[in-house]
Image 1 (cartoon, rainbow, N blue to C red):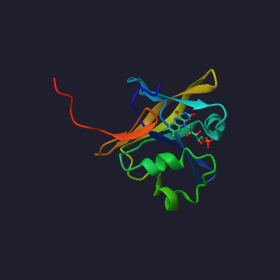
Image 2 (tube, protein in one colour):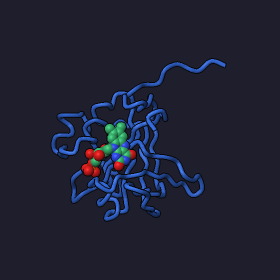
Image 3 (cartoon, rainbow, N blue to C red):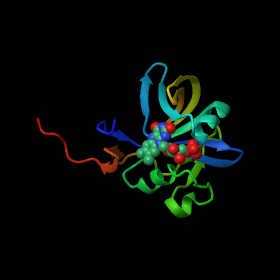
Length: 155
Ligand SMILES: Cc1cc2nc3c(=O)[nH]c(=O)nc-3n(C[C@H](O)[C@H](O)[C@H](O)COP(=O)(O)O)c2cc1C
């Protein structure tokens, strides 16, 4: 799977007023009408339990300057309080109370549609209720390393 280049997202959800975030690249589009997306989450993560309990979350698509944020939200021992100081991550709240990362390339407000256990992960499918898109280039992940977009491919 390392040969398959992806973008990088942070899944965000509200936990009693605190931001919980998790780095995820197993993210994909599922359907255009209705607008559905999926994310695959390891059974052993805290996020797995939170998604089942909350049923609402955000998907934040990272830009090329967000490597530190990706690394931070992949660390098991991270805290909400240190996110800004250590990774520069700041959040606004949507009208649903979901944390939205400042400066991400795109934000999707998601409501859980269904979930399907699959091996040691669960596929969470969500309906997208709101979308915010900004200009910029993405953070990419390829063969275990962070990359950025190169030039166009010639014919
Ligand atoms: C680039 C990158 C992509 C990741 N993608 C996923 C993913 O799609 N699904 C997943 O379950 N974990 C993924 N992880 C690992 C989680 O971010 C990591 O296990 C995290 O600490 C889980 O946090 P939690 O236990 O607080 O939920 C990824 C990590 C990195 C660095």
